[in-house]
Amino acid sequence: MRPVWSGAISFGLVTIPIKVLPATEDHSIRFHQYHLEDMGRIRTRKVCELDDKEVANAEIGKGYELSKDTLVAVSDAELDQIPLPTAKAIEIAAFVPYESIDPIRIGDGYFLQGDGQVAAKPYVLLRKALERSEKAAIAKFAWRGRERLGLLRVKGDTIVLHAMKWPDEVRSPESLAPKPVDVTDDEIDQAMQLIESMASDGIADQEWATDRYTTAIEDVLAAKAEGKKPPKPETGEEPAGQVVDLMAALQDSVQKAKTARGEGDENATVHEMPKKKTAVKKSTAKKTAAKKKPPAKKAVSKARRGA
Figure 1 (spheres, rainbow, N blue to C red):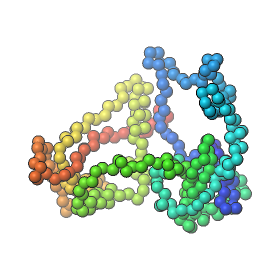
Figure 2: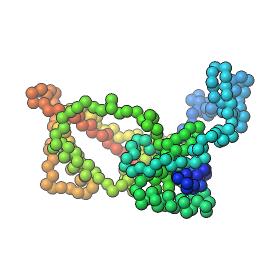
Figure 3: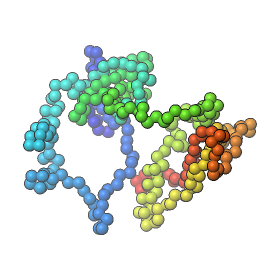
Figure 4: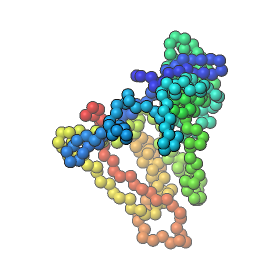
């Protein structure tokens, strides 16, 4: 695994030489573009607009357009030497409770590896201090043309760095909230029962914690490579769009979740779902939410990696 960056962690007068390694992998299936007429590959080429010739990456430099006729060239060496404290250091600015951080601001994760024997003791010191304090470190660092905000936390025996969004990079969700509606305590209690019936200790080794989309794409590609027709999805019933008793829907969902986990409750009360109605009188109608039945799911065969 190749480091994506190297430098040091700096907090107070302590410096820890480190290498930054990717913490995640992308297993998405990637497609090429091709010409429908003759199946030729469509490629992106870099062409100079002055002489209309294709150029290699080694011939390409960075530049900033000050105006239409003025381009300022900047070399990688000049960028590496910019007078910024965080250019070669992950500079810790503060330690905060982990739960105080809005998860929407936390981005990609990277593993930090101590660089050499000199890094071993301060690395372990910082890791144990973070564990004992139950806090996360907020840091600043400069990567890929900009200064970034970061979060340091502990995973096992390793320190993890997460890139973070700056406060002004997170949009406000206030305008997206639904209009006020009446929800009863009984409905909330029933929703909490549904949450409890679907509760899990974590996401590791769970049946639902798999990428079914990638597996389904692999099945399609494998079938087409063998000259067969790709598998077709089973057609499910279309949502009827009728008014539904929300409480009955919640109770039915709780019972189904318990049955799926082998926790059938003989004393559970399950209401019959109301039949489709052509009209609902305003005087007796209760505000209810429409329930959509999910389409029938087709079991996906085990992923054929490398198919």
